Length: 568
Image (tube, rainbow, N blue to C red):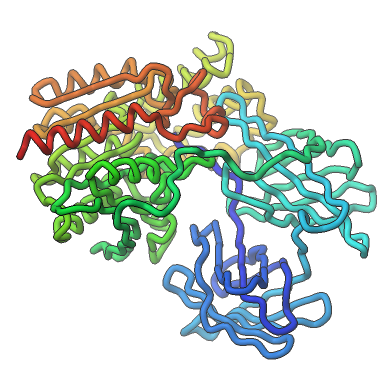
């Protein structure tokens, strides 16, 4: 299931040189880009550029030069080099941004943005954005007032890897303070009146708004306890991989290789829907990091990669990401299999695929396209027709949220109507009113204060007609599975509310009934991420400390190694 994230921003961290130091923020206009809010943090050797709208994180800055209060540097943004030149004058920095190879020049204008947690008399507040039936998003605000009377606010949303990011604060004459996170999905705005007791804030982003109450919370933390997350030193080798795809993009990942004599069996990990990094990071968890560590410690090499357009996987034209389908991600997976087959430490006859959620659709696709896949593991992989699977997903999400049966029935009935229309090729005009009705039912059932106006519905129509969804609605997973003859392990959690075990596992058993080595298993009490859960609700993912149940990890490594022994 796709989960919409609020945050998208630009973060710059530069070496502390000369007389320029501290954190600065303001607007930067990159040639060819709209103006974006940036933060410059002059901080020793930690020199990076992050721009989350472009999926760029911790990009090193090169060519740093400074003289007094002037400086220059350059940075590679997905293959495009930008040159920065700036000068500090008192409490401001101004400068230019030039795109290499072009005459066009942008600009930057920055002012100091001190880290609020380091300021005297700082207050820490906590609240949570509640998207009923989907998730709860905890938020932390650090607030302080400078000696000049200027209000400073840092926002943390740990589940979305946003930590102490400065908000642009504009006080109004009426005492109302407007605090803005400049996000790629649209500015996220908090409006409040400053107080020593609580901050009653109205949150708005696009057509979504919700009233929040931030309370003083000195113990609020921006870190998680994740006991399974592996820490070095590791008892295996690890190396970075960068693969060139024939279509012009690149796939970046990490290959972990067991110690000892090879060649070793190997797997490619395939993430779920939405752009995922190589660790499939979600709500403070890194499932693929934990899985890769376990498998490699148990004799199985693992290649895990950033999805195209995520992390360090470079796409020259990001607009093309709107047109990708699972078939495109399958080609990226196949490229990784090709790479593994060239590595001397890897047994080319023992390369398998492990796919989670949408990855459980992609793994069979790749196995069907090739003749050298030794086995596949489907972790919460769908099999039934997409309209049925998605309708049941919507129903279960609303059930665990406690919605009334009649409300659920009305939403699901309209959802099936809309998805069927999309599958059958309905035009944008034909989808407008059915999608308007569905949007009204969904927002009302979730208690969301959203105006379902024409622009909202038009955007919903565009989302419904994206190639990814249209391809999935037409795809026949059962037919693909019926053609596979390699060993298949299909697993689900009994409390998975996104891919329902009681429906999908029997469908897989029926589709692959002719397969001589099919194993299916439903794990009691586990959710979509294979965590021990109370209800399986998405809102629980962040709260659960366990990333991936140890029994599931052991079963997977044992199942893979048993088949390697049998083949030998």
